[in-house]
Image 1 (tube, rainbow, N blue to C red):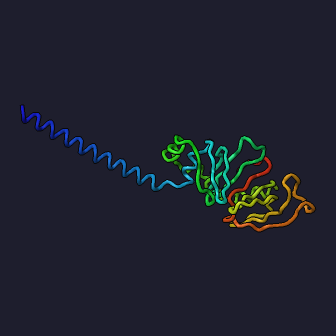
Image 2 (cartoon, rainbow, N blue to C red):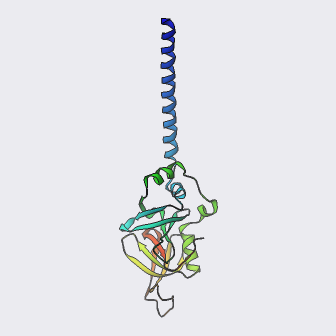
Length: 196
């Protein structure tokens, strides 16, 4: 009878050790999975969630995450009648969102649509330039420039400065700026616009 109890205790101890080892392996596998998740993938998991983006220069944007591209994300604000705000990922410093959404974004992280994943920040800006959409460019130093994007290159844009309430016309343009993408915290479409 004693031996039966002894072997039962040994089996229980062995089961506990195996369970602890399995839990440690699962924990390590989860750490490894989390170490491979990029911000882009977590943002894709947050599509259609309301959140706040903190950007370089102290700008904070609130709205619903509507699109995520190769190196940018877009928020739509319910309060504004303008188009979305497009922020390059390099300008994002923090996100404010409910804890449940934060956890879900780590658990449900996925690569997203392959076509949109290839669309770069420059691609979206070239589309805004093609459609002559008036924009407000939020710079990383906190300043804002308003006007129309004339051209968007690989790492910069040309902006014709004017009041966004007036259409871009040579008589309404007050100046021009060449702005590097690294200086941009966000670009707000000041007219309704669809993101490609």
